[in-house]
Amino acid sequence: MELMVSSGLVLVFMGLIWGMLQAGSRFYLKVRGQTDVQKNALLALRWISKDLAEGAPLSFRHYSPEHPTVPSVHDGIVFGSPKDLDGRVHYDESGNLLWTSVIGIYIDPVSKTLYRTKYALPDHLSVAPQIDDSVHHVDLLAEIPERRKLAENIVKIETIQGPGNVRIKLRCRNEELGFGLSVQTLLEMKNS
Image (tube, rainbow, N blue to C red):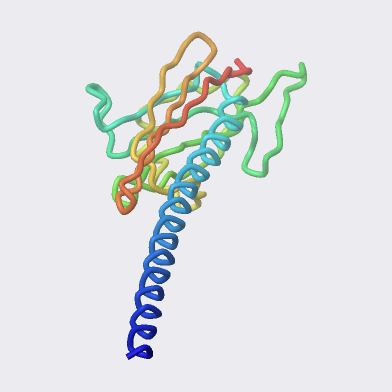
């Protein structure tokens, strides 16, 4: 009889310990997933901030599926960069920046992945390139095969452009975890 009672108590304690381990494991996985979403969003914002700080307000353009006049499949931004594809900056004889490339940052609407693309302008320009929808549209840049994945679970890019600056807000959402967040920054675009 004593053996049966002690065996029953051991089983009850083992069940309690097993339940605590399971709950702790689920909590750990949920917090780790939330941390991954936050880390991805902040790293993506850092990339965008670095690129945009070197851009010019004149060359900045935001495309969105909700935009009434310029239809777009992708939510994203396009802007000129003084760095070429190898990351070098070029100057003219007077020491002025030459604009050598255009950068596109966009969300793939199916995978909710944020990508960065870049292509060289055919001629180095002495002024920041005006973004032309027929040439620099974010949907066209999304077709460039060479692209860099910046983050996952990004559902929206929001921008507010001021005189010489841009506020960028990324909205993130992990449906499996039921977790979402927004990160934002205000950037001063240094070059003109």
